[in-house]
Length: 160
Image 1 (tube, helix red, strand yellow):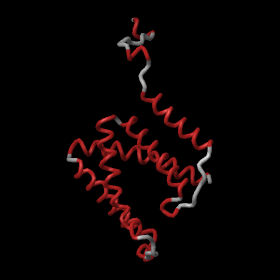
Image 2 (cartoon, one colour):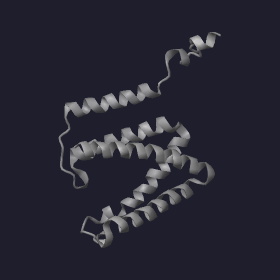
Image 3 (spheres, one colour):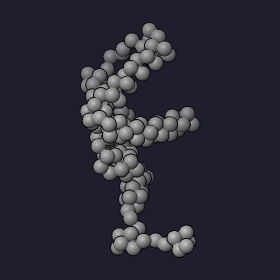
Image 4 (cartoon, helix red, strand yellow):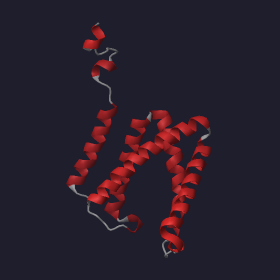
């Protein structure tokens, strides 16, 4: 379980860094060019790493539902929408919404057993967790009352 937590934390960190990098690439090229570069580079790196670490086993494919073979196409939407979201909302706001959407969708799919997942009951504890997450997102982005009215906060360093 500890290794799973470490891997999930690493994934979250890498997603944040990748999003920032993708946004910087998008400043230099068009959105679809960014997506093509990101996914193309990911394909090449994954292919080389697969050959190095898995050898011939890399090409062993087991049967699965046809639509799962097209999951890479979802990456186009992920990269495109995340880059545009960051450009529109800013990094922290966009990523917090992305993470909230991921959690809500995962919870939904777990609860109904979609995509071959084992059905996990939706509980009061999970509902409270989702509400707390969304409440945290709102608090994270909300401006303090004095900023909403046009007031500024004065600190000791501002009085010199």
